Picture 1 (cartoon, rainbow, N blue to C red):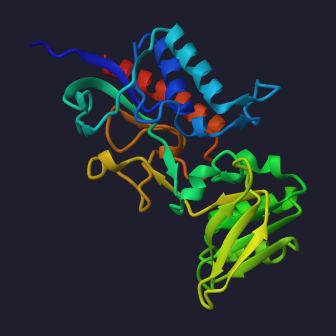
Picture 2 (cartoon, rainbow, N blue to C red; picture 1 turned 120 degrees about the vertical axis):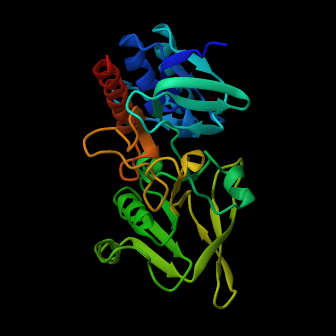
Length: 313
């Protein structure tokens, strides 16, 4: 049986995956895209997207992803609603990479990994209940909706400190809940928090529940883990800032990752340490994590893949 070797397979369906598909398709690479478990990626859990250029009235995350998908399909990208479960990458220039979707084998000359990252949550049932009603994992995405209101930020690292100082500019008051008696953040970020008058830090405090009417957050239920004393804070928004986990489990041991599991790419490029394998979006970006930067790197990955294929001939 002859193997059907594709020019380009894209793994993941967020802004980076679909943008890569648009560019790859227009370059005649006839890309095939595998959506994974969450077609549209993290954006499908974001209600309003107001910071993506070209949508003056804003757009919902799911609608924007549908638009991107339609655009990719217009140029004959083949979209598979399946998950890639295993990868066997070639280490040779011009080698054929092998991917599996369950029992199905897929062969490709280039692979663009855009599997994204998943925000870590505490695991409270209330987080799901109030998702989109005041619980968020992205201050730059959702902070705008809390202008002049009170919010809670959960976390102790740089992400939490950054989200708290960002939100402090927009909101009336930010209460930070830090599980231990110290921050994990860098000194510079700690100073920024300490020098922001409308941030109150509660050390040794944890979020244990959320209350509100009509699935809208009204109160954060908290506990002092030293005294076991419970209390509540009246707030409109709760930001969980305990980090993200890149979706790279199936690539461990095959491709170079950093200590947190993000794919390492060459500076100024989307190339990984393996020839013909490229990475775009949040799976290789733990700094910006925006739809627009993901889309930009998706464009870069498709162009890098096209160049790689051109140089093989």
